[in-house]
Image (cartoon, rainbow, N blue to C red; front, side, top):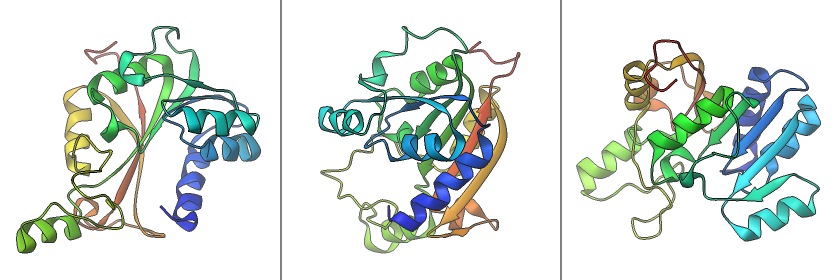
Length: 204
């Protein structure tokens, strides 16, 4: 993901997050998003990352990041212990996305999720015309080295939230550096959602 796209993505998150709130970033990578939110929103930030190298990079920047596999859960964190939990480009890479999202919603008052749209028209065309697993700017990996374990579309995720009684408070769809408003499940490369719990959800 290039720097321009990241800046747009992070700006959307900053619009959704209140100043001085507490944030837990699951799968925080090199800590770029955490550093951005600390700088722009003065959040109290903490991250979890599996890669030891990435954790060391974050710690060297002065970020509070711990090495942990989020597939094992977040049992050390109490319910609603963070204002926001972020799963950006992480949900499709975990072994148990339903469990990871349930834990994120439990620990956070609100949860931000971002993932690539596997139903983007370029991905569809690659499968239909070439008979191959798609390799696109949003999905740049070959089948044998992709970190993605689950393949979902924007519509899949919206249907999932409806089934699980998870409230979608805001959403944003984009391709490259432009917002996509028209048929996002077809034309958007990425989707971002601000979620919250409901009393009728089976999770809570």
